[in-house]
Image 1 (cartoon, helix red, strand yellow):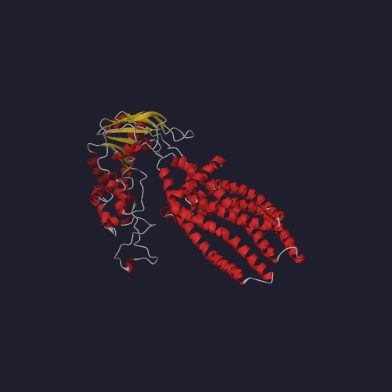
Image 2: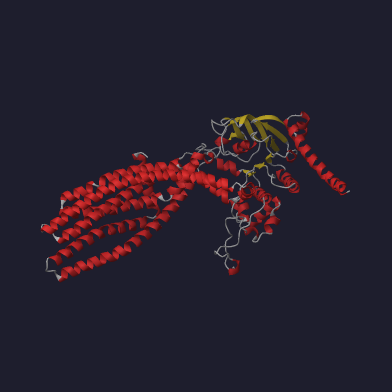
Length: 630
């Protein structure tokens, strides 16, 4: 990190700390100053007491005062660190909350999905989470710690100069190389941590797989647990090797600088002892010299440690600042055009799109219209571009060429939040939220989160109300295997788990989760565009028929886009668009496309043939059993 960037990181970190806990920061500074003068005060009081005693005529009053000061310093030395640690920890907690909020507030500026689908940015986010929240507090602690140790070291250095200026210069000179070396090592360590980021991310991935509920079945059936564990351990070994290499380098440097400092201190101690033995120095000078040399070296070591810690944290804080400074992945107009409710329709005009210059084109010159009030279906093979069209309609990405218009207004001219507020959707990769059943539905429209009537109505339309009603706490049941439900007032002890948690969370089947996702879409109510991306892929035939019947009623008179690999589910759409290789291959009604004998007719015939084969096997099964019995 360059000097200007480093200075900016320090200023930002200190500013966050000041805003988060101003009073605690001031208290921290005052306590640090007090703790800085205590060692020097104790050393000088000890010297004066020894000189009084060695002189043979100790003054009772002076000795009593010095003894009282030493006793008071002892009490403060005993209590001070605990108080300082409490203030430091409390300040760090407050700062961490502010830093975390700023980080995730910054991620909300990313309008689309590009940042979240970038592995390098994932590493950046992980580093920002890991170090961003702690860095401001650590920088404050390091800055005040450095100031404290510098004050203590300066006090001891001045004390040492009263005994021998050249010895003070020798001790101080042994510190400078150590400081320079440690700062250089801290820069290398920060670079190492960034370098092993992808390796550690893969280790975390394999580790999570080994305890993941969804993966558990395949891991055990295929016997791949040991294989994944080996891959996880390989990542750990690779990361450990890099850390060990850095540690060995640091150990070598610290051994050299530590030996140099020890030789300087040993030579000085020998000199002062000889001086005291010859009578050219006072006995108190020996005590002061020992305390001063130890104090200067301890302060120098502490100063190096604090500066290196701050330096390394500032370097790592750069990842946090990089996230804060990252520009939105999609441009948002300063004065967006306000689009009213959809009245004419949505048009895709010669849309070309690819996820990066290194990727192939996902869409190539796609042009299609979704008229107001009609149901349009997208059909085609896997990878044809259907889900990409959905992402572009929701403005998760922008076309590289061409345009998408909402009643004639280019989506790029609209406020993305306003656009998405007009869309209801069930995505193929819908979310399972480890929250209550009511919350899982209510997230579809936060204005209805506390409206149990609307939530239950949406659940009924999705056919999941009875399922939720049979759960232990109904709509307040936690749908999770990793969290438990909240413990309410008045519960008896026998419903608590041994570790004091609440009721065990419940996990639904795939089809039930899909109905909850559908309920989220129903909760959004009168949206202008309804997108249904494989809304029944996890349901059995009876449930699928029920869901599509409800969706047909819900879609009636509404503008909707339906995507499904099951062509029987899209046959009643007003218009069907068939994508192939990112292009519009054919379009028309179900009857017209079958008559054309193209891709749609071929895929429909294949699916129909599959159903006929299943029906034939089912009808033959009883006959086979009877013939076998005979």
